[in-house]
Length: 274
Image (cartoon, rainbow, N blue to C red):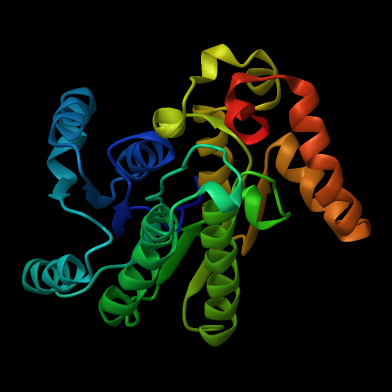
């Protein structure tokens, strides 16, 4: 069997305690990788370790706020002392605020989502790339969103943050061409706990369940894309639709999306149209 480039490598994964980050962490560990998982919930990490069996020995946990740059500086020092170098970063940390009109969203909430969904990845790359650059398997993977592919009503701060991450990653890929593998992931809705900040749950929105992808399936697609070193990854029927129509009718798409959301009458979009 052909040896995968990613086997037995040393990765840092943000947002590793839940959602896609958790599943990607499990997949890395299954290939003999060492993972430094970053998250806020010690309990979630404890539960994860209990489920890993022998693989738990290669999961090192860091509990900190990814929006605080000083935490990344401290992590760099820890990793330097412990390993000397690492092979890659997968930035999965993110929050998804409730759908709401842009004029009704407090600036503090926009700042919070930009710090979490965009600047945390910038901090990770800025401070950890010096530990990655000499690895023959240097890799940086940033998980953006389908919201970066088209303007979606009700997601002003989130779309802005994910669009910034998309542009940042595309520039990074060009600047590091031949020096590191840089992957950009733009997934559509996956059935994770990302709705924890919403005024509803995934279970209350049948249409969303129909068009979203199971978290395990989404993570499998992302992980296979990373193994193949794909630079641009769009996964999910909703993501592919946004990607396609935004190429040919961007202005029309921006107008159509709110009409579709309103007609769906889903609880998820209630605050957007009240």
